[in-house]
Image 1 (tube, rainbow, N blue to C red):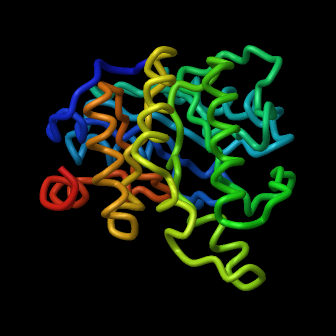
Image 2: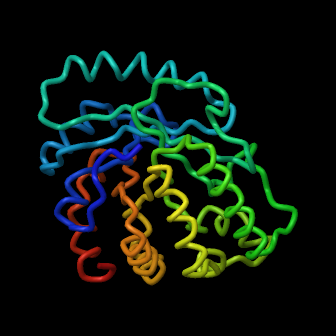
Length: 253
């Protein structure tokens, strides 16, 4: 389900940050509480944020713990920032994903399909760049068919695969990402649009994957998809993504 109507106006896109981790994620800074995230969002003039702490494969019990912690904190807070309590979930293989059978009450389901560096993540039989791309494609189509995601986190980006396998397989940044054709991207985006599944503009990859992000954005705009901007913040100083807005306008838009 879309959190907002599709828009391609930078002012509207960057008025929200839909990818924020608190200290409930192992990678979140210790002082990154919900209060710290909201305070930073208010200072940045954001209208909406989504809390998306990691739920990796087989970590489903953490969802209930996170909700017990965050829900009362949100209820106690006085703020004009709209707060969605969600999670960054895992599509960790073909027809394998967090909440495959459960219907846990999350307000935002952000699914990562490319955390191949994580324990328990399914690896393709073909460990070549094209093998990983084809595996990603099958995972994405299966997730779209399931209707489970509200949005895909950092889609098509190969940095996690490269980080894990550059020494053993000689992978380099972009060796998988750049294999995606315009038609493949357009077909996936069209299929997701029919299910009201959004695609993330993850600001952490703007600089490294600028050419791809420009192509990805313009294909999505042509298809008419919904984009959600997220800074993948793990600390309060990363909640404000205004710097990336300028970069987006001058290098991607």
